[in-house]
Image 1 (tube, rainbow, N blue to C red):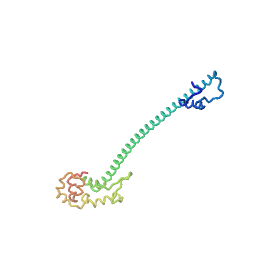
Image 2 (cartoon, rainbow, N blue to C red):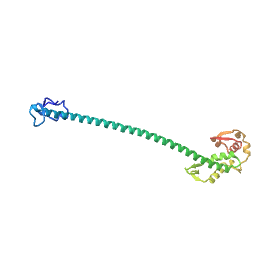
Image 3 (tube, rainbow, N blue to C red):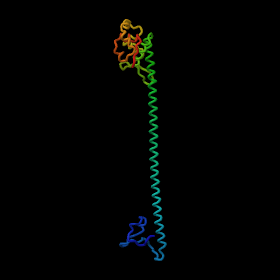
Length: 222
């Protein structure tokens, strides 16, 4: 219950403090038409009602603040979950993209191998092993632009016929109708005896030994 006169209002709520005014060294209720002392019950009831309304306003303000905090937490949680789902989706897309790139690269390599094999077979129809070696060399000049296979010699694009002419000059001993002597093959049994050598070793061999190696059934590894 409120008092009409107080020594201090420091302990009162702000809403109630505003109802008092300072009168000398004391505080009195700032109201007009104060009834006779025996009729102050109505004023006291009004003040109590104001205090209750102030408390209710504070309670509602606190409830609204708590609701706002919960909503902000829910929004932050939803954003975090969305970020996780987005990152997972991006990861799956990257995996599929890599799979597609690998699959495309394999198909393109098959196209290159097929084009190179055709050149090798045309240059060495009578000997499958020589054709295989020539095919391997032809594939080194091949490129795939995403649509077709092309051949580059010295950075310039050429057709398959030009590449075959180039290979004939580079490796005449491997091409059908070569003027290379067959004696070189028979006299190089030491090279032919090696059934399997690396590509770099084959490239370092003299032309006659390469021919002998291929004719004697030697195999070239990468």
